[in-house]
Image (cartoon, rainbow, N blue to C red; front, side, top):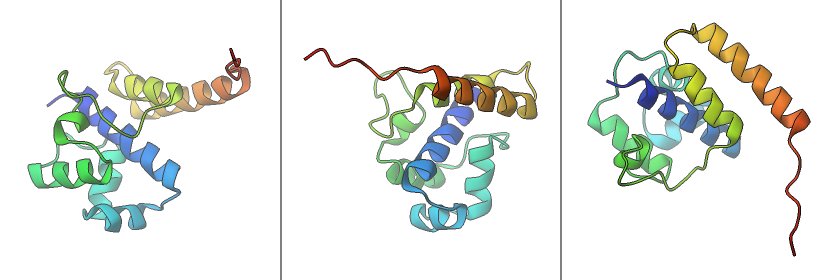
Length: 125
């Protein structure tokens, strides 16, 4: 089991729910897994990867493959694309030196700073 994979799955779930503005129960019903399982995965509170059936349902809901969900080298995820703050969150949550509370606090702080300081890309055309 890879904590980076679990953190990635959690970030993908969170990104999809944020993007589609779905509550936990609605997202769970949409993807076909229990809301308690979806919540645990999103928070990164699982000690192991979900079973194959759950991974398949999540991959379908996220419009990717199981390989893409697990971010295997040969098949990157198709959708959703993670934002810079979400990528940072995945790495913070995977850092074994940080408690989950500390990782979440750092993630929120980074997101706020990023939103304040990030500049819109210039149009070269």
